[in-house]
View 1: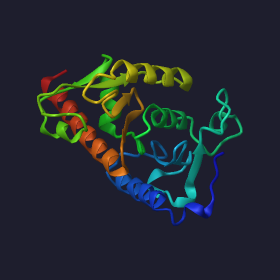
View 2 (view 1 turned 45 degrees about the vertical axis):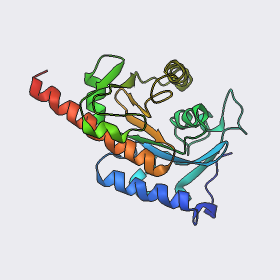
View 3 (view 1 turned 180 degrees about the vertical axis):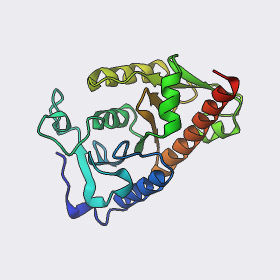
Length: 224
């Protein structure tokens, strides 16, 4: 069930998520009503920003409680035609929580740098190496370690994207990140990151946004 009740008003997780939304919007990483933020609220549930709401102007009452255990697996309520308050991308947030029980927060931003670079890079991953900031990503031991940030093509058929996400995560189970490197790019739609806490997800976001901006500048200078 997804609800918008006043029970979130004093919830520290809800307050923290809304505060972060304002911070990210001020950086220009949440354009218009794009992007979204969520935080785990239980073993099988999370709080997430409602669709068509400016994520920089969220208040706890704008957050939806998503319980994926209570959903019809074939047609969860956030995918139903009558459910206007939950975005389609809710399905990606849920998939990331289901992939790893330790994931506590998922953030999706649509900064100019992330969106543009996601359209310029034609390979299946963005290779990052040689940047000190890489070490802010959990599992990245040094600046010389290669991080292959996956790049997925966007599709309106979210179940297909979820399947691809799951396959990619399991294929990298033996990597230093024990799966995907806490993030991926979605072509034309920006960056997704997650972490074992809201603070860690924020750290991963700031690190990847910095690295993406560096790579975009490098391509400009190289004259691509």
